Image (cartoon, rainbow over all chains, first blue to last red; front, top):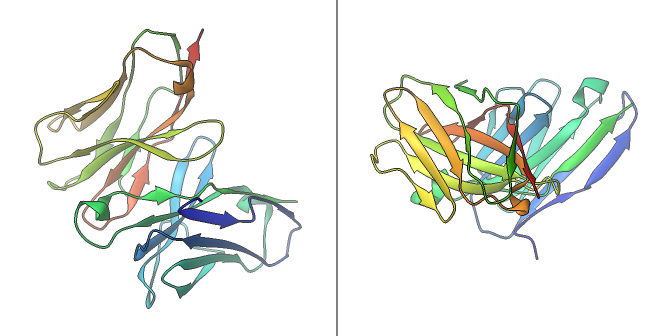
Length: 115
Length: 113
């Protein structure tokens, strides 16, 4: 079984709809991250969380919100989806200390299309 | 955000040959980490290799090796004995001690049979 899972894997939604992307991990990591990937731009950090009570904005947080429901779960919400939020979204996790703190493990990604 | 530049959008290499991907970055930090990630058509992000800035020795993982030039802020990836399974997009990434990754735009590598 995969250590980092994302649901759904693919989603098509309409402009103005609220949508939630979910991430779960069995690695026991404290740190979790949400990125979006756009062609020609690489991956950009949306939000990150270093423990259940810690939530931080990343480079491109406008239009997004997150919830850290438990150590293993980190959800990304688009309150009112717009077409330029069409992208590939990745969740990632990393350990809290030691060399593992510098290695992030990625989920399989969610392809989101906003029409 | 840190700037990571990959100047080669696409590269093609014959099977069993060697290909080198370039990456430069901009930072005023002294302690940081550099990574190469591979993204095959399955879109899974796979860590290929990691380099700590305080280490002078270049990292190597099987057929993958890096040339880390700290003063030049350069971090290239060499893939030796290329295999068809190496066909993927490769991302260079930078991390300060804040544990946040900054990625380059990626280089698509196609290995020809």
